[in-house]
Image (cartoon, rainbow, N blue to C red; front, side, top):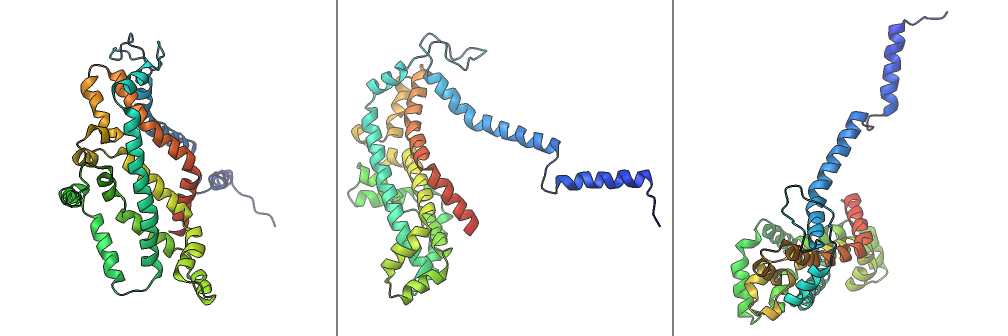
Length: 299
């Protein structure tokens, strides 16, 4: 005996089948268009100012950058703005100073945060929870609250007006310690126990078991530490007095006073400070995204 279905029933089932074939996680065409529209909007907001600065730095002296209908592409393409910035301030000396500070900060965070994070995650000692709580408590304090005490400490150590005094507060970040603790805690305990049964010491377990599993997180910490140390402006401005010891961000402030009427040179100086970050990120982006992915999966 066969059962006939009405046309309305067949249309209803067809409609449900069509919606079901798209799946619950598949957006509708309108939803896809909205997603792309939001992505383009975010891209313009994030990349737009950078591209405009780059375009301004390449414009010749005859072009008006304040015209009512601004032109994005330079009509008189020139690199003389970069050469003029290098002739006005010792930009390469400032870049070397910034690189020195960033290298000290990276070494301090990679080594110090690795040791502290492994100790908090794998070692058992009295007061471990108290130490972890103190680390967490420091995260709620903004940097401006402790900047006076930092300067008094640096000056009492005789490191005022020196690159060591600039790098010292950034050589060990509490947030990085907690990130390394989380990364080490995500490593299976059975690996440590197996190495312990084989007679491995704490250093051997750290080197052969722990570190190979947290290299991604280490690369993330290294990249963010470099960006933070390279871009820092307030702390080097407070510590340094000798112009020859200025970092690049502090030294570029002269451009605002010397070339305040020429935005092309200010834009060229901004690009000089920005390009090293692009180079470092491009060289380490493979490790960076691997570290982020590992943190997301293990977390």
